[in-house]
Image (cartoon, rainbow, N blue to C red; front, side, top):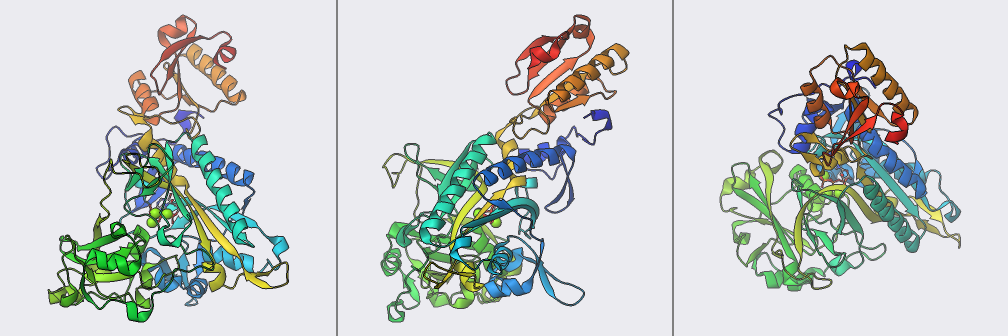
Amino acid sequence: MRLSRYYAPTLKESPAEAEVISHKLLLRAGMIRKLTAGIYTYLPLGLRAVNNVARIVREEMDRAGALEILMPAVQPADLWKESGRWDFYGRELLRFVDRHDRESCLGPTHEEVVTDLVRHEIRSYRQLPVNLYQVQTKFRDEIRPRFGLMRGREFVMKDAYSFDKDDAGADASYKSMFDAYARIFTRLGLKFRAVSADSGAIGGSFSHEFMVLAETGEDTIVACPACDYGANLEKAETIAPAPGAAAPCPPAESVPTPGVHTVEEVAAYLGVAPARIVKTLLYMADGTPVAALVRGDRELNEIKLKNLLGATNLRLATPEEVVTLTGAPVGFAGPVGLSSAKIYADQELACGTDWIVGANAADAHLRQVDLARDARVVDFVDLRQVAPGDTCPKCGAALDFTKGIEVGHVFKLGLKYSKALSATFLDEAGKEQFMIMGCYGIGVSRIVAACIEQNNDASGIVFPPPIAPFEAALINLSPKDETASAKADEIYAALTKAGVETLLDDRDERPGVKFKDADLIGLPIQLTLGGKGLARGIVETKDRRTGEKGELPLEGFLEAFM
Ligand code: ATP
Ligand code: MG
Ligand code: MG
Ligand code: MG
């Protein structure tokens, strides 16, 4: 590709809107342009990077036996009503009506659509297992789209869905996806860590997030340096109960009366250690606390908070139920009703484990607060107060804290969607059974941003070769000089023929501009031709990552290069 004919509008300055380095560099290197909040156009270089990620993802999904399909972005509301998520999903789901007044939405995820697909075709255990995946554009109306490709409203995701006939099969599908994810992130050249949500009382581990380690990550990960223990501290995913083993609902008479209860009382009621009680605060935009969710064992994640903000049936606690949110006593407003199940976007609701508590609810006006409009989540407080250096719960070693970017998520769904949408099959005995599902997401476009967060220096991006839009930058210092240009063309043709994807800078620009742009775009290898080097019959080489320079002869260049 010739830069003179390309579309890579580089910028000298960082646009003011960009806060994190990947966002700045993606804009400066001419890889993306913003259309509107959280919605970007991928320019040629950016698209090549996204496609490189997608290619590796596809290769490993195919290798794991998953089959690629492509599902629609527009989804009918009816399916979401069937699964119960039309009401539960909240305002992240972009809804609209078509010309026939049919309610629809733009898919933020595809459990409903894929389950609908499969329930119409699969009749027998002989047709299972099956794992279907796609690389597709998702839409989520994020409350705070930011950081460029990191948290967009429209973004590219790979999502896979497995259907199994029994629990052992579902676990094998899960493991095969987990292993494929580990291969994908290794091949992409990223420093990552798989972290799990502790399944606590429910038992078993059903959800893992894959985190790219980076200071700018929105998640805090607690990780053990000695064993494989790792968890997402702030928003560990809720664990779905194992199929057939829903979390026990406490008998109604055992529910404590609303009022102030100690952490120990709440913990005893939930049957969990006091150290596991977690609370989450919601604040008004001006910083006034509005409400808190106090949960035993199952931590809230961001999805659920957002759904909470979109929920209409929230109840704030009465003044009597109000408690100090920072000290030992925590509020207890009684178990949430089904209306508050809205906070559970995509997990089964385990009854009796969640409460809504008001803070400052003595101020009557707060009870009229429109949470969806006025509140925002500004803080999470984890009463477990795990601190760096505490004991790893698994092996006792001192825990490390790091920041991470969630790039992938594997989840054992169990029967949630197959039950709601009646996706059944006949087992060996001819008995009708629900399929056991898993879902597996990868943030394809987010990975490009995450990769830049991990791989950059003062001059720009330092692409790992697997993601780099091209392998080599070939800089012709003297594009007006016919000899230099003929040589550059010759080398460019030879590299291209040898399969080395090369970006030839043949622009009529000063050398300084060319070097700066090459560093900014960050292709792994730089080859410079012209000036004194050309006279001496050499091409200068530079390794973008190490800065190491070298020379290769013009005569027999390709052999020397390879
Ligand atoms: P997050 O916690 O960052 O909001 P999520 O848990 O809501 O992500 P999942 O539903 O698990 O996301 O979706 C699968 C993957 O899609 C995520 O692991 C992430 O890499 C990617 N992803 C999710 N939301 C976005 C977004 N707004 N922009 C870009 N990628 C996203
Ligand atoms: Mg998440
Ligand atoms: Mg999210
Ligand atoms: Mg997730």
